[in-house]
Image (tube, rainbow, N blue to C red; front, side, top):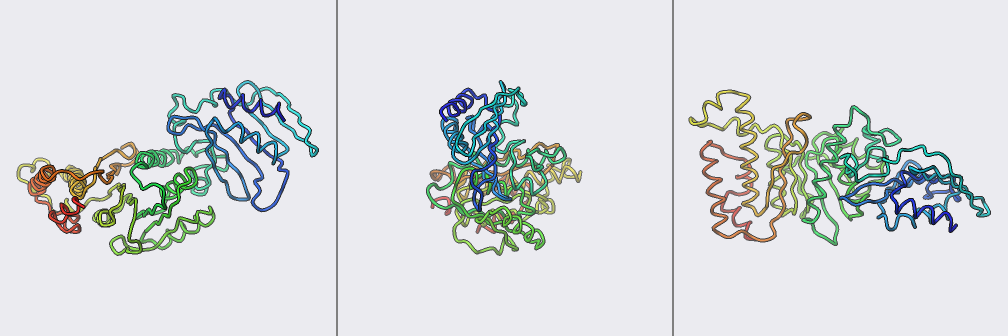
Length: 400
């Protein structure tokens, strides 16, 4: 098998391997993969090879560094399969191994373009955490990919949104506790595209020990999500019917996600996150009606007299006040574009991570004074401020 090992190692190290497919397993039975595919993927600017093992209706993905991928591929092919197809830019290599272990390697004209072997190039798609062309079970189940892993044209916007979300998750990973099980809650999860993406990325791709709970008021949606999680074998993901404000099952949560929870439901989720002392909060607000009903300013009357402008200003003001309240509670906050405005107007994400050290008393006083001036100027009475116990209580939390 030395000839095969040297061929595989060369193709991997020269970044010439576009795809490998292992078939005709030597053993059959429960738990034994019927097929394995291998493709190059770019993760955080580095080249990995994604091994996808197909066992029954399930697919298990593992991202292996380039330095280890050749050895792993050789071991799989040499010990568990009788046939392999190595597709490179230079040629296709058909590998045949007899029952007695006799090796045959046939060189054939290439069937894939060499450019496909360069996942870290200029094409932005190649930098996605989830790749177009690599089957991902939950994306197939949700109708975003076909069985071969090709993203459907009409669902590409959703595919991009999911990858954008995972980029943000990758950015906040250093702020989460290390070396123990993570507890994550997704309030207002809906059909849970991003909840399943979160589980797949953290647990399947990165091997992080976790428990994720999705919460929504719609019973039919929760039933669907639990059924899908069971089919996928996502044992550490479950969905519950319930109201954000009333949820009290957990005493400690490390990350709170709230995407498109309407109006003050977003505030209820932020309140829960602060009380849990969550390390990370990711919130995409929706339908900020509260301040629209409250806001008033003679100075701003040229703006506020137009309904569409008042609605947009109220939404921005609401999220500005939310971000400042989170800062007063001891978080560093950023307001970020979640996805291109052309796809949805609800595209603003509040990202908050627990600050490493408390601000000085002077800094906290400045933050509070700016918040109060702005709040009073527009005559707002934010739900979140009252839910958190008011400003004195918030400043006390900051000192914890």
